[in-house]
Length: 336
Image (cartoon, rainbow, N blue to C red):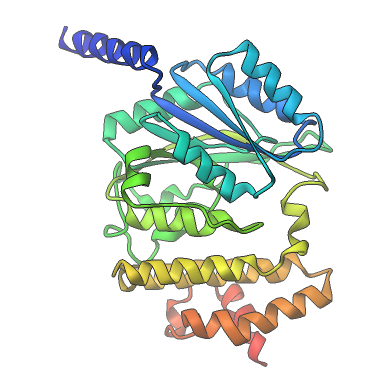
């Protein structure tokens, strides 16, 4: 009986929020030349079994038919709000979304991906149940060319153990291995973001590294839903991932900003081993990413050697503290 009363009270509060222009969840989607997949993305959001949300679409200076698609969806569904701006990049677009959001929770999604229809309901329920700052979840890759999907990935529950709610203090040395930097596998309490002054870096790529890991380190209560709600498209040669060679050094700026912020907040020493292991693997991945572009690969290695490695002291741990020996040896070999 009491449970029913609580449910009715929550329903009434949500109804009042809708009446006064608020929503339980703000879904923020930057859009840049996404005409091929945009409708699939928007439909998978608007067809959620949880309806108390606003969908903020930031048109980031698109030059294809994306603006017309967004305008049509805005006309047909009052939950859709389109914000048009000159091209500023994904990070800056998400920051605009944070500024305009009214929901209790925020989720950042990408305009070329699509999502399970029970995503918002399960994430909202978990966040409310645990009073979490962040809810983590998994994803699957979807190959646009073959139509094949991967197994569930992006969430290492083995590290979490039996904990339902945790923070950096519970798992200081392995904390950052729980999830990947993808911002679209996290469900955030908006107040947590604004109270901590969290913003995305306005850089062409790797903008989610700083935001994601800073947020995880600041959070007092983190939980998870061990399901793959996001379907991440791969195999598209016009995607941001395929064009990282245009700005290959953004990851260095991201890593340095994270290091500086964690030190500024006085929490770096708590997560030093975890952060160095994560950063080493990140750097090794970038080197591998440019394996077929020797000039860019050498530029990356030079900047690592002369800048990031000494700046963050990536090779200063005792050797036994490096969990992935292969990645450690890749970074160590830069000096040979």
